[in-house]
Image (tube, rainbow, N blue to C red; front, side, top):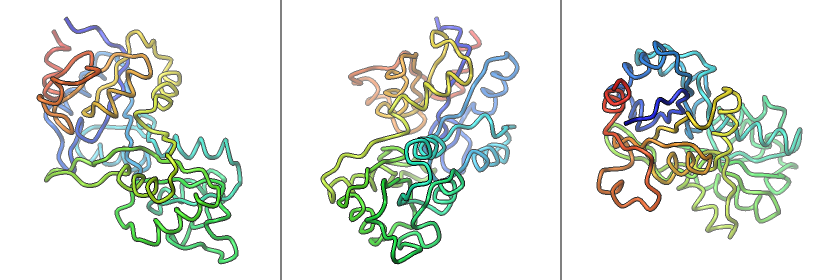
Length: 273
């Protein structure tokens, strides 16, 4: 029998939606959480969107969503950088939205305007204290070149997440982890990770919710990301087979999730008893 979970941490890509398509049961499951007074947050490794962007997207899919319900790995990364290197120079490999978010947090983003080149020729990537890497669909060789030189000059290498793929409605695209892998090979440095599977984002969110870990659960579609993060945070985990993981992969998981369901519709059926 399924435990009566009171706090849900929900991944988005491959759980609630896939590309532009809402996945089965998503709207009804969120409505059930609201109707039964269960607390929940959306936790996403997606580094291309702000919480406001995600909330707007969910509303466009018919799920009423206040911005405060959304926690992104980009948010967590920028907050960490602002605490560790307040006002100091950093280099960002990512979309303009990530660079702007970092600048708004008081960080000196050396490539705020230009992206692949420094805004000030006298303050190039080798002056950065750290490099932050997010998903970047307009990535060019110059982005990798600048970040490589920054890390080889002493900057710390950080990734918003290590997702190898991004689920789309027609297949999978390379994720942030693919970009990080190139930089790790080029520099010989292993990147630090802020988002899942690291537990920090989950633990911080649960604390902010005032949640009891004993009745909290992480719901995701990735064994190596969502499920690993929940296990590292010490909470139960639910794997959905609507995204990255299929039944055959789930069956041979070294560290299996607490529960497995086909999708949110299947999970809702079980939760209702």
